[in-house]
Length: 252
Image (tube, rainbow, N blue to C red; front, side, top):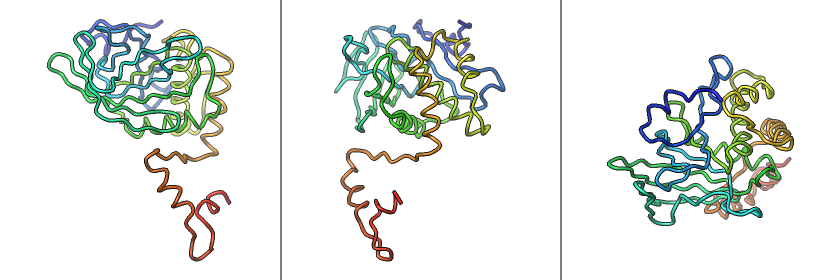
């Protein structure tokens, strides 16, 4: 594993985080970086988004699956204290496959607002049934993300399978947009120089290819649960000129 970047070394808290997908110049021109949580904790707070100064946290593991507990719930329903860290719940927005939590996290005299994106339908060692689940989730994460911010904290359970697949897909979609080509093998090899065994299974590797294909062919149709009825009513409305509903026109 390569040396830890200066960015992490500058953080006073001694938490075991590793950088993944930190490419050398020319390999990925997007400048996007991620911090991968390895399941350790600071003061009882797992994968703490305060390190390293991130304002976004991406969780890819359900709290419990058939193998047992996979992820400690570090986002409270109201307020919780983990050692020196206080976490206060502000709001949440629910979607079919993921939830967005808005949190205020305080350590000493520092309070940070953190967006926590939690994808709940990705099985451990496996892949979601439909690639669009992850593509839609990624688009939502990127709506809030800018290029001058700290790396996004990404974690699953072990921090290699689902986490590696998500980061690899994100890098490849960025490469596709900026260069018009993708190099799956090259990107994965570069990532594994920073964190061993990212993308654990052949199924996850194949999923990346399926998701790349789907991203080219299908646009986003996701709707927040709170707006589903309004959107459904809108799709049923008839065009006065053609006499066709919006939903019929959409799939012609």
